[in-house]
Image (cartoon, one colour):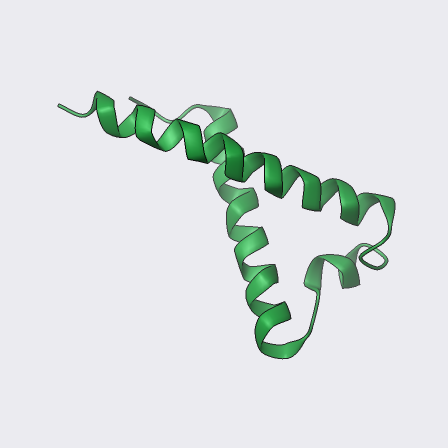
Length: 70
C-alpha cells in the first residue's frame, strides 16, 4: 500500500513532535513553543494537537500498511 499525502503529513508531524520531546527531555527546551510564541500560544497548541492526531492516525494506519504487504 502506498503512502498517501495524509500519511506523509502525519509522519512529518511525528518527527517534529519526537524531536521536540527529545529536546524537552534532554535540555528543557521547547522548540515548537519557542518558535511559535510559547507553549500556551494558540499556534503551539494547534501544532501539539496535530502531533497527537498524527500519532493516532499512524497507530491505525501502520498495521493496515503492514497487512497489505505481499
